[in-house]
Length: 254
Image 1 (cartoon, rainbow, N blue to C red):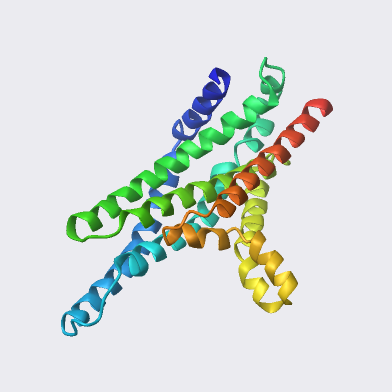
Image 2: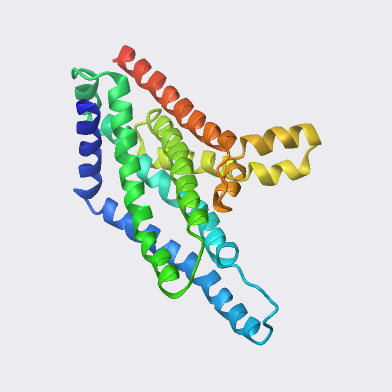
């Protein structure tokens, strides 16, 4: 684990040794702030109307927290390709990939280190959003369980995107190509649930199961279903496995 931690620290330092880490966190915080403010303004408007009609009950988790979490998955489509595009592409472009492949490190240690480094950056992004959630607890009384499960779902979904982004980055030395290809694949996975509405029931069930956002709905509602957890963990493992095979083939070609 010491080697994995060293690689993860190296990756995290690489993000913050240049402006890219700060820009990504700022961009993520800006978009989340907007997606948080819009349902908040709508909830405030509805609250004022419900004050005139006491029989109308409002649920802050359903009207504000849930939509904010779902909109966060949209931010992932924009930000995550920028996180993963450099993980292997930059190593290939600069020639440092040979140093890694010839170092006394296994492919698994390198891949896990890069993955955990990217996850650490993503966790830092999510930690900024805790400021928004704390405001709800200061001025309101939201349920904490849907918020906790929502963050768990975001971490698991983020892990899926990052593992797949690592694999795509390992296929090319051009960061722009890696970013565009990663965005295209992410978008395809994100819209699978929409596509399923235009096909037959059997294909619809298959696409709904493969849809990465379909499995997040229960997390946003405060429900932890083992089938969703298994799906995300299997997706992460599969993405890292593909990355390992890609790196292994690079080692043999080198």
